[in-house]
Length: 66
Image (cartoon, rainbow, N blue to C red; front, side, top):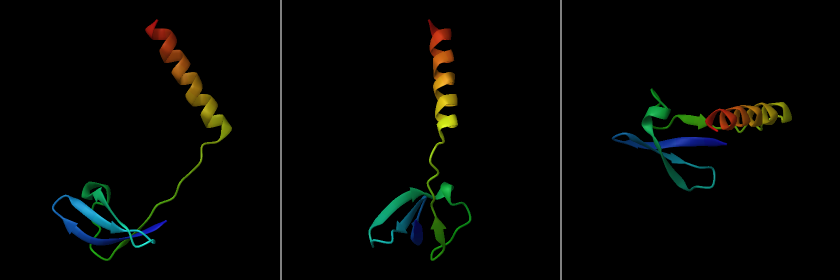
């Protein structure tokens, strides 16, 4: 998804979505970006192996706390 920086207000960047809606994000997430720049957001799905690793970590932590 491509977002365009509409404007920056103090520590908030107002981003325009492809739908024409606007969302605010903390400016710290885009560091040196300026008004008119675009940001591309991608979503990476977890693999089955990553899910298994995450589950194992939670189980070990749960066992330690008991």
